[in-house]
Image (cartoon, rainbow, N blue to C red; front, side, top):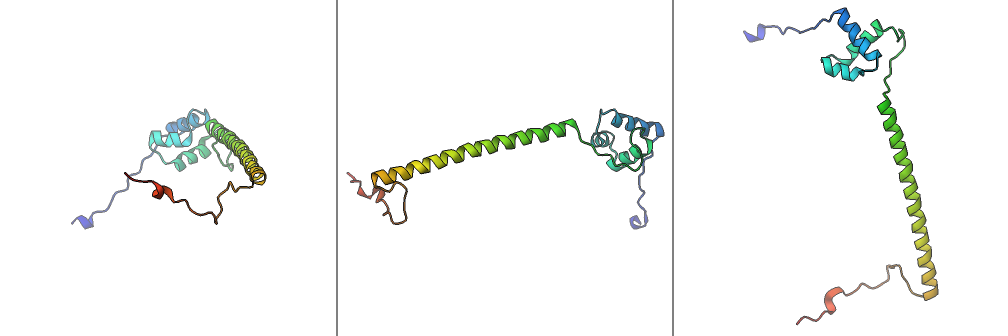
Length: 132
C-alpha cells in the first residue's frame, strides 16, 4: 500500500514584497546572498534570480559578482604575509651563504674537515665507556 503513495513535492511561494525586501537588503550591502540564503533558508540561485528580476541597480544581462570588503582585506593580509615570509627566507638564505663561506675559509686555513664527509669513520659512541 505504501508503494502506491506518491511523494508530494513541497514548494514554497513568496510574495513580491518579500522578494523585493530581500533584494533591497542585498543592494544596501547589509547582507550577502549567502547570508540571506542561510537566514531565510532559500537557495542562493533563487535570490540571484530575484536580484536580476527586481533590482533597480543591477541591469539585466550583467552578472552579479560579490566581492566583500572583508574578502579584499583578507587578500591584502595574505599578500602582506607572503611578502613578509619571502623577506624572512631571503634573510635566512643570506645567513646560510655566510655560514657556508665561513666554514670553507676555516677548512682552508686550519686544514681540517669541518663538514662531515662520507669517508669519515663513524664514532664508536658509548663503547669506550668503562662500566663499574
